[in-house]
Length: 611
Image (cartoon, rainbow, N blue to C red; front, top):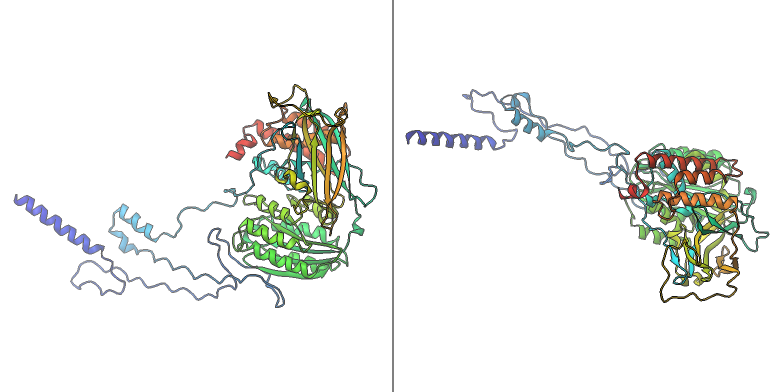
């Protein structure tokens, strides 16, 4: 009993000592009693930070860690700025000084480790290197379904001249990865290529219409119906005076070789083409927006080049402020009867200011009423916001393109300048009514983001796509003739098809609506499509079929009946025709790359999308 009492007393004393040691003592405490045999720990002096002047208009994005501000782009006194520059954040508190060696000497290994953890800098986890986390953003859309003509005889959609999906996917394949299915939009693959349609004979009607019907290469029991539109061409010298505002994303996310530097090199290609009657302004945005180059005559190439060269990337991304300022510049320099356009170049990574997509869409829809269109140029990877760039272009009556190389930058800004900049027809809609006595099923390939309600076709208040000078637009339907064994849907037990007039001659009836620039009332084009298919498809239809099949294969190949990459490559290679610039040969190589990636375990497009 005495022993137990003694042990209890010792344990109690030990607990009291531990409790006493755990009470923190300020560094200004008086030293221990002079009779103590324990040497006092060294007194830690408070660390004094050197005074530093905070950089002007700098802020830090709480999510990305980017600093805010326009580097080397100090706006001149007359510059317009939208949004208030962010104030410099307060300096973070200095971390405590590390413990002295004497303080650590008497501790156990575990106690020393715990003590060190208190003084380790935060965060202690390694941050991901650029490129390790893929934050690319794509809008999900299901492929157009097969429709029974007896149930849904009319198909209505808006034309689309975007090409960004094709070049973005080209970038992915060249880097050795299959694209996610949502990155693949078939119409943008098809419309990347020129199919040699004859232009209109005069400009009273701004575009010609070509149709063709032939057996489908992946299933002879079905047919492909091609509808091609070709806008009239305008030589570069005859393009009206252009009022261009380049809206440049100079945020920190653009500080990569395939973003701002590629954009600068692409813009220099365009500068040589600008004329004295043209006007150019440059607005940049990071945390706030500023005018880098006020409206300047297009023939002042050295001045424009210098402004482009001085762009540099740093900061967060206040795209909303940039859009507002760019439209203000464009409306201030508006040229009546000329080309008035904002060209937004970005990776789409908006993270401060107005970031809600619907709010941005509303801003652009309001400004397009002034007659200023918006074209978007996408750049980069890992954080590329395709969904944002496409939405803004659609809302701004413009087109979206993705720049994956300097060659593509020249292709869009120089070779296709008139198609990119000069609108010759707006709100162009297509409607096909299929003859149920000739067609059992149909499926529109692509254009999922451009589908319209049937009643929208005659409603001039409904926005639709625009055609630029020299641009061509192609739509392909896969159809199943009535009575064909290739039908995908069982006929209704109690249904019956009403025979249309001229049922032995007409496959479908085509209607197109469009407005001339500056007009609010639409014009109508109507024409029947003959039911007699060609024995052999033309070179243009074979090549367009190969491109549409490739897009379908990348999305999972649901409608190809086992038609694979090797067959697609062979079909395209046999229909290359005149390929002076090598774009069609490049396409064949892309199909072969996709074949190799799919064969060697990289997964299908649907698998990639699921991941």
